[in-house]
Image (cartoon, rainbow, N blue to C red; front, side, top):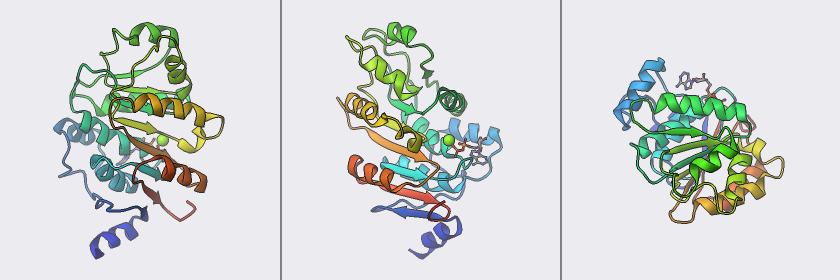
Length: 239
Ligand code: ADP
Ligand code: MG
């Protein structure tokens, strides 16, 4: 469709996949929780960035995505907005979204942004600061007090490898891998397969991967491991 192609050309949005949703050009009229729209408005952001234009409608449609867009282009909100919308309100079933980041510093930033975007929804966002404390907190009997987890893969895998398992992520609906190019660098694939298995035990999990660089290996991996992948690249072909 010509109008959609024109939009994608204008914002340099390259997509690859079947039945890719139309990009949104404005936050007004975005069909998400009122609280989210209020939070966006309070932040003073008037229009979505190109990656947000394309990834928000895709994730709202529960599509699995690999999104590549330059540093500073607003990737964090492109996954937080659809996740906060879909989790809607607290439920006592434990974590329903897990966001993985390569470093503690980045995890802290995402945690802050997530607290802010979920303001008014009552959703409870947690970051693992100390695995020993977490082990007590998330044990089988007390895992119900949070909805969203932000963590490095190290910490999560450590908890998953305890006997008995020290954290329950069986009800996770969304697994986000931020800065996934960095995460693939050092032995992360094994950690990721532990996390994928634990998440997918009792429900279908949707996966979303974000990166600043577009890497062929990454895309191959995502095509193999994600379901009906849509890949989105913003900018020039090689960024
Ligand atoms: P990335 O993860 O792509 O490097 P971030 O998500 O950290 O980028 O966002 C970079 C900055 O842009 C942040 O300060 C963020 O608050 C801001 N930002 C995000 N979305 C928008 C928007 N739609 N309009 C203006 N600024 C935005
Ligand atoms: Mg980022």
